Length: 170
Image (cartoon, rainbow, N blue to C red):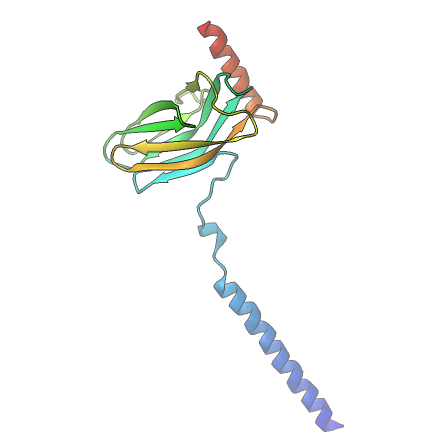
């Protein structure tokens, strides 16, 4: 009897060691998720080398072909001003000048922000719109940007702002 008890203890000990080693190997091989850069909002993220990042980029409109508001932020980490070109779809292009080591907020609600309005949205709400971000020094990259309609807060407030701007222009 004593032999069986010691065998069971030995098997349990070996099993516990194997389970522990398995758990340790899984945790050692898993990436640390807080080290992974991601877009923490509905908007898209674009990176052009070490020079430029675009964060939380999205398009707000009521319908395809209607005016659209572009929301996001552009950060220039370069020591020189950067002329950033945004191409929405294949035809709509607009530029933003970003000072050295500064961030430009594409946010009409921000007192220091800039407003970027497209005369006509190239895509309907609910679609993903290819947006190419480029600079003369860092090349270009294309990201898929969500087109939203203001159904959810706080985007409804932004569409109200878009309505005010387009009414004032007419």
